[in-house]
Length: 406
Image 1 (spheres, one colour):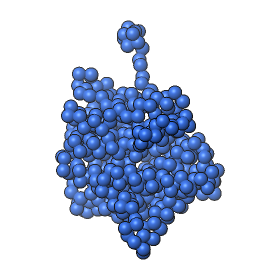
Image 2 (spheres, rainbow, N blue to C red):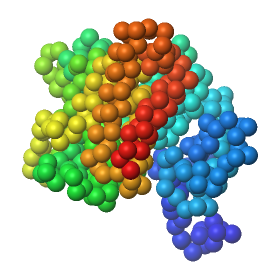
Image 3 (cartoon, helix red, strand yellow):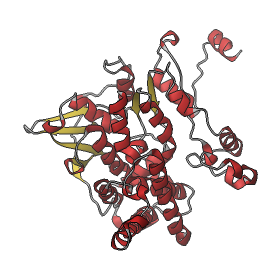
């Protein structure tokens, strides 16, 4: 009735629910006869990992504690009771050709891996699978013939610039960052940063979690790890620069001194469309960059005193093993606490530093005494379960630190 009436009156129905809005953006007026399948994704809610024999004891508070979203009570309970939309089965379905992996956080790990195992074209729009289990994903893709298409704006920019250039021709990859809302904030004012200020990004409109990661620069640290696996380039050859205007989305420097950069207005429809149309480009009716209107492009080195999360994540990237997954889990836990206004903004980096110090001490202690005492998942990620265990270890350690802060 609604659809028929809208056709008669000319009303336009705009989907605002996150899943349907994502499809609305991805379709971009594509005719329905060209659509093979629409795939709705789910986080799995607060009980995605709860043993079945513990459901009898679930409390209201636990059901309302969604891991990723802040929603009304009714929709939060709906998410908890739905549990699973069969994401892994859908992602590996024989009739599915391309899977857009965009579930925020560790929840996207298993359905994305199912698509890779099934040899699908996977548009990777979430960082966590490659951060948590990058080597496993890349090796599995080689075995199954799956194609990983970077959908994040920075990695998509590099993907376009490289154009199948072999790794030995690359001098370095340069990820660009806007600098977020606090790029000019005096250091002595960070103690007073509010949630509203942290969520006020100057260039991009994003979800709450990624917006906070941008404010702390943790997103760039995760992107370094992701780029390492996507492009087979060592961490030492990946740099981050501030590009205030968010016009140059990333660059590649080649061994002959040439630089190739992908430029454009900050609009996620471009990288999404590039992946959906790959290996061809799709025509988009969107605002275009006017080079004449550009007064200047500004590049700056990253101030690690201002953004202490970046060196933390860079160290985890170089350590490898379970370190990136531990850091990712801890970060999700801490950012959720900040979004709930349980801690201060500056407590994010301090808590993460404490967790990674505990990680280092655990490895050092067991190395001196008995290597057998070290959980294997902290040393090397050999399976999805290893990645999830390392993630949970990081969350647990972060929870311990947060107890003292709260």
